[in-house]
Amino acid sequence: MDNTLRLISQVRHAIQRYIIEGLAAQGVEGVVPSHGDIMVHLFEHKTQTMGELAKKIKKDPSTVTALVKKLMDKGYVERMIDPQDKRANPIQLTAKGQALRPAFDEITKGIFEVLYQGITEEECTIFKNVLLKMYANLTLEEGGDYETNKKKVSN
Image (tube, rainbow, N blue to C red; front, side, top):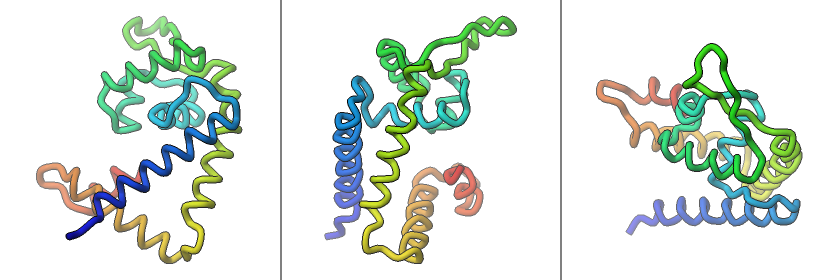
């Protein structure tokens, strides 16, 4: 029997455990792996509406809202008032949230160092391309094709 799905799940679980242990070692409280996409995106893009953020990190808007609320409760993000569009209210990192960037960068670097040990650059490239194909296959839009979906998922 093919154990690909179990292996993918085990790798994901191991990465999450590495992140949790890394955050704890850095003294970061109240942030879990599911917050990672939001934090990393805000490190790069400063402010985003909930809708923009959900689209960029490919998560359901209600999930993003719940995750952001937890980050707001911990003081890592804040809602801004947009005088042009009172409904938009983009979010941004607070100074406390911005201060987490070095920890996130260090943990991410460590993950890749451990993850890619003993794996050649060519093997990494092949692996990434296979993962992109698998993801595109699972998310094909009607009438879509691998090349079109590859562009969507690799951004």
